[in-house]
Length: 448
Image (cartoon, rainbow, N blue to C red; front, top):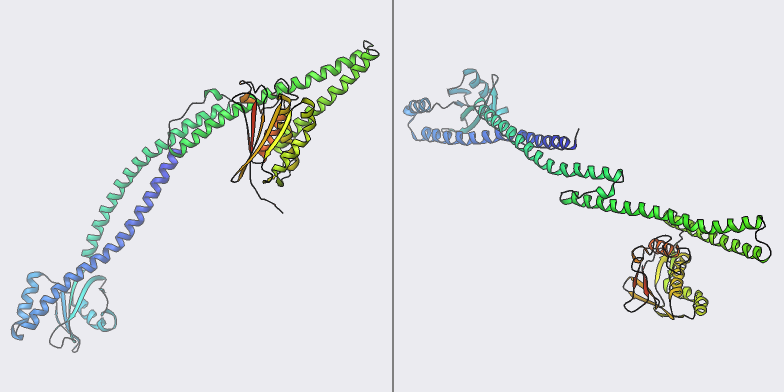
């Protein structure tokens, strides 16, 4: 069953159940209301008759009372408890005698009396003389009230049917507005399933469906970007692995065939060892990237003084900076604790600072600044800057500049920093050189 029909059926069922329960309670309450209203009218009639019986002479009381009852068609009963005698009644004789016998034991406080299979709404009152012994009972057959109750129930049933039809019309309109965007969204998702990312179109919707639609389109963009990056990764990886393998193969075949001898053979062996080390480094970095993306074991966080790790990374790169004649300067905070893997975050800082040293002309500055619960580490060099076409993909795998090595260093750094709950970005300076900014949050998990 389609979602629209399911929603319509559910909405109609809820309306029907609610209205049925409501009518049931109203149907039950209406009888109580009718009984109370009828008793109020009976009370007024009884008070009128009581005044007549108390104000008139005994010789003329019964004739006037009889005439009034006949004119008004009052169903009533007057009996004397002391003498156990029915004085006057417009009810069947069997009913009058039955009520007289049962009055004191059963009927005194009841609002509805039954006899001979019939039910009556009653109001009873003592009348003079000896009001405690003479009882005037005014009655209305319950059947008359049930006729009113049934007429009300029929009207309510008509109202339920009309209300249900209106509810179904509203439900159809509302569910149609809800389901139509979902149907269109389903078609767009099918395009994503078939990897037709560039054909995904916006869907006209509102509310939560609009948010889902935006998420779907964002997912399509991310999947397209991810698939393209994977394709580029495999292309770049194959190229990076292919180059040293060709060098190794060429020198190996040359030495085997006797083409290279003596010093040339020695130089060929050195190249083979160097290219093997390069291959090993590329493979290890690729494995590390894969583990950072999927494995929990490779990342072991603890409470670490991040500022101290930055200084440690600077000290390790001092020989490289000294060799290139680059002034490596640090300034800023000395204490900031975060919950990270010490060795991994150290590796990330070494990669970023080392990249700055390789591209700098004379100076690399490392600044740390704490703001609230975050620390910002800026690595600023005075080199030629980052080519504009390279900036958007700088942290992707196998993307490298002129002096890059494997093209994996910055990608590994980004993976480590993001795994640490931080962010990294790069931009060119106004004058010259580039700035890398890393931000990490203060965290205290497992702090000893």
